[in-house]
Image 1 (cartoon, rainbow, N blue to C red):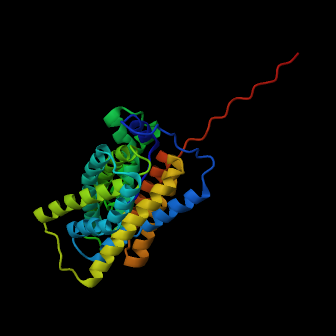
Image 2: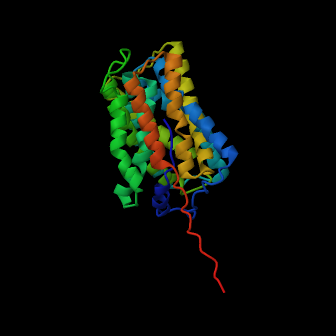
Image 3: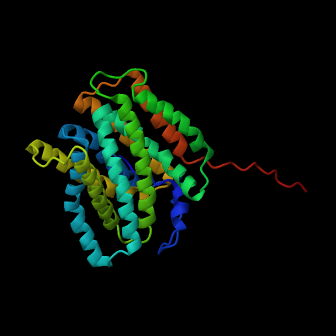
Length: 331
């Protein structure tokens, strides 16, 4: 899973009750090498999440709940230290983060089931729909203008998801590839909603970095826990290897990746961020083949490539228009 700070959402969240004035995104013409390195490191860490879910070998509700609960062991002290240093966050930030966490928990449940159904690589590729879904959500909620190329990308993305999900055939080692692709796409929509709400709360204070993540993670833990108790239950007696994989999932996928991506994307233009974060689904497919022995078909690989290429084309920064040359005046 990965985070995209879509440019069209900046204008939406800037109009909310914030403490600091809206600052436009950095220029895409000269990206900071340190920000690029930080972002790529976060994307690399995030690409392992599907692998760790598969290696844990437990059900979707259990993996989703413990991913959040174990992450709070790290995020809780960081948020407490942040509150002592900068003061308590206002109720608006906490409220937005808590609401965003409900969508984050929904995303985790759907995406984890998608990994188990379609494989780690394909699930992460299909999740890329959130890159286009986020500005579309901003358009539906507040009427923010959406670039025409992102509207045109929607049907192409659906075609890529269908191919990646195995509509033309899938590998025999995936139990329900079509259902996995659909659930992965729905997870991307839920994650787009999480990003939209989380940015609205986080922009109320520039000094609280860990607090909104910790609140959203706690809310996601409650959401996944209630869903698990109501359906399959939350397993507690787990083998030691499962606890190890879940702990790694919590630290890398819920703490390290978000901190690195958040810091890196803050110094980059949204189009640059979107393009660089496509490293995440590409690495996920490669790791799924190398580590888990997944064997997607040619059609599934073509669908994955179509999704990645469409997301890149829809989110890249437009080239500046050249002004026509003006002939010097004579006489």
